[in-house]
Length: 389
Length: 156
View 1 (cartoon, rainbow over the protein chains, first blue to last red):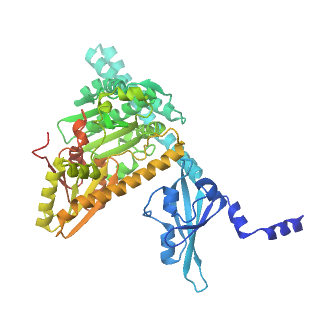
View 2: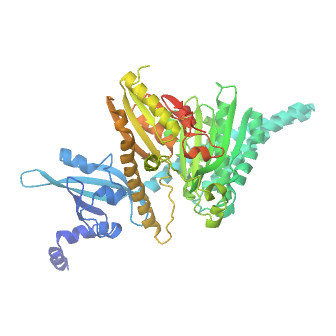
View 3: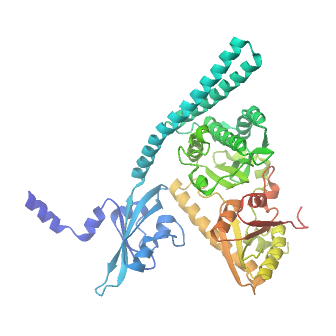
């Protein structure tokens, strides 16, 4: 039996071995052109990759990547490793570990680079989930313990007030109880929402109604904190198919964060939180939640969407923003953040109007008259100049 | 303040043209490097699957290729519009980005040690929005360097 296997192995060619590798392998020249790719690569990226550059095939761009292991290999003849995000031909995006090594000619010059790409997306996802799970137990236990202690404090004040028949003290204690019930409810709802990777239950909804309802939930809270909560909503934005529960949670978490940031900022006398809804362009609309609180430093900014990273100390779990990102991703949307220490923070959430029926789109005045088409391009300017406009 | 690196942002509006005059003055006065940036306001990678005859994958690929082609076309046009107007400056750089203008402008300024941003008060397409703050307002609020915004007497 072993002899049979030995004989079969002798019949294998280098190419058949490379083709059988369960990872992508390619050989590239100094200009990053693909000279050879194995079967796995050709299967996922198409048969016509030979002669094309790796960045055109893997990233769909026409310029070199900023960090490129192949470039480094040609430079120092060494082995290099990097993590890369690759766009598959089927639209999938995968995280890959890329190794590059030199191929030498007989006198020791590097004539090509061999690059091997291994899919590490599933490993990284599991790693992230395990880290998140471990952190979650520690952070949540701590936060829930704090809330329960505050609740006990509130109950004690109410008990004392009842025994002394002090109505004002009763109201004070009851307010503490209510605030902490609100807090524990929010944390519990966020945990439940984040417990599984749910798909959005799409319904035909008005983005304006969702923003108005989310804002109204926080008017009392804002008033208590002395913060002006201002809604600026464009009623022309048409209905779209979204998961109303998810979008409400997303807006609620962002408004809540903005109010908490204002509460924490002692430098300014007047605090404002804006909730906005408007078109982004003719194919997208956006929500913006902006505050004029303390903003974020670089470290905070880089960590805000990681689970259980919070700047609120005992007042926050960091779960809210992680959920915001998940809800946005589930709706194929995009989050942008502008922030500056001392000035404030703006969260912009962009969704496409693509779910909207064509007739609904055209019934929107802004879209029907074409005024959301963006003519701010140089070629348009040049045409205008030529036309004497 | 001695400016060494000035970023001029253009969307070819009247306001941007007024801002350009000021950007040139400042660049000449301080012998500063002048960066020209044009941002194509598009949502990348929040893409639209417009062509229903294509698969999602092909549509995404076409969208990426379209974005890159568009960016390169705009880059050529940006140089064509401004290169001749700024001869004699110590150094000029041209760049076209795709994304939200305020985010891209601030990011570019941070990455290139820009110490002054000059831009028009209102972009072309922003005049039509109902309630949103403008790119200029956001850049002024969130940029990590000095910002000058300039309005044109012709703008409405």
